[in-house]
Length: 151
Image (cartoon, rainbow, N blue to C red):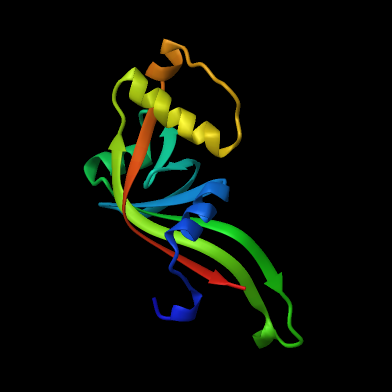
C-alpha cells in the first residue's frame, strides 16, 4: 500500500467493516476481459457468501476461473473544500482476493444463506427444498485482504 498511514492493520477493524457493509463488489476475469458486479453478501470466518441464479455471465466466468477480487466500503463522507483541490473523501474500505467455491448440498447452502441473512439482522428462517435447489450459493475463500481508511 502506497500510503501506509491510511492502512488498517488490525484484522479486527477490517472485520468490523466487513460486518457493517451491505454491498460487496466482486470482480472476475474471462476471455472478454474483467467484469464486476455488486451483491448482497454475508461475512464469516474469513469467507464471503453470496447467492445467484445457476446461469449468467458471472456464473460462467467464475466456473471458468474461480479467482476473484472483492471490495466493500464502510462509512463514507465527502469533505468540501474552498477550492476544488481541497475537497477530500473520508472513507473506509476493504479489498481482498480469493477463490469462489460453489456450495453443494442442502446443508451447505442453508449455512451460506444464513450467513447472508445474519449480515442484515434477519431472524430465524427456513428454506424449502425447492428454494435450496433453485439457488447457487457461492463462498469466497479469502486468501488476501487489506483495509484502508481516510478520516
